[in-house]
Image (cartoon, rainbow, N blue to C red; front, side):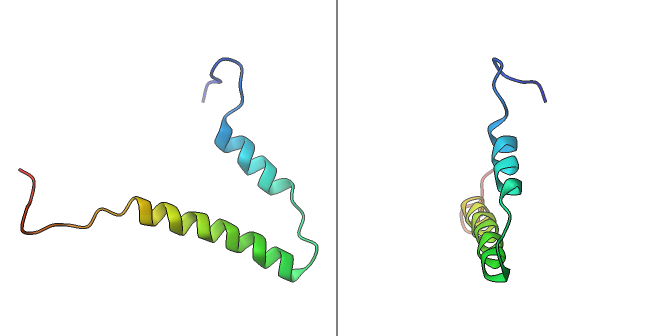
Length: 58
């Protein structure tokens, strides 16, 4: 991907920030993983488009 106006890609910079975090113990590691899972679930919910069988688009 090309850089836009000399700035870094926001998504990639967030990934780098997440990877730089070192969990201190198992509990901290689990909390960091839960944050990732929560974000994925939120994205899945926001992109859910249930099918309306009574009013279908043509």
